[in-house]
Image (tube, rainbow, N blue to C red; front, side):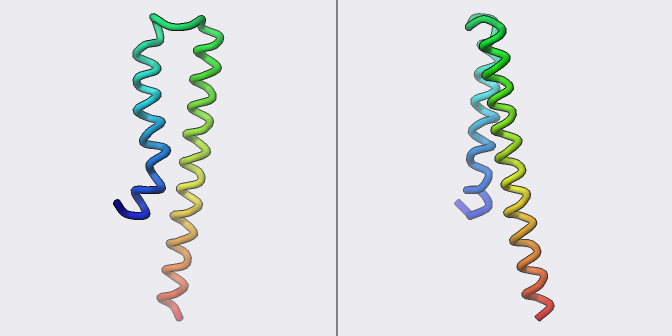
Length: 69
């Protein structure tokens, strides 16, 4: 596994978890709790994606500046 794959691991896990969560939506808890959990998972996934983007941009910038030197 590469460093790039390691950075994607939390997001990959959340997509799989969200799919299972949504598929069991009808047979589970009340809508208010379900909506809260879905919103929390979505928010965390967004934070992971933003973190991945920052890391990717940071490493790309470093590579570009190293090439210019």
